Structure formats: C-alpha cells, structure tokens
Image (cartoon, rainbow, N blue to C red):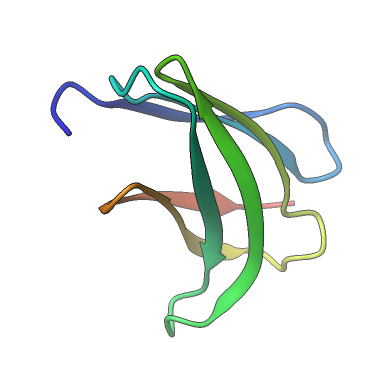
Length: 88
C-alpha cells in the first residue's frame, strides 16, 4: 500500500487516542489494531473497519504504564507500525 498517512491523536487525558489512517484502499475491509510493548507482547487488540480508504478508530491505552509502545494495524496482507510514547 503506497501513500498511506497515519496518525495517533490524543482525545482525552484518560489515555484514549484516535488512530486515523488514510489507507488508499477504497473497499470496506476488516482491520486489526494492536498495542504492543517493547518486548513484543500484544497488550490490547481492537477490531476496526477500513471504510472507503479511511480507518478511524478510538483506542484506550489508559491502563498502560508510561513507556514506548508500538501501534500496529493490519489491513489485508499489509501491516504498518507506528511508535507511541505514553507519559501520564
């Protein structure tokens, strides 16, 4: 997938964030979003939908301690990862 734009935007002071991805894939497709710690352990997994080239999902990281995490999403056979730093 080329031309993918991804961002994670905080939406509250309770640890929630909105993952917004412009995927470039026009059809409706299931997506899996995972929050992963630095050891590679999947801590939380969320289902989402790619709808007309847009993934717009609210994720809750409020129970996670301060640290660096990977936000991984898989769409079709494509997996992308962004880094996220949590500091409360």
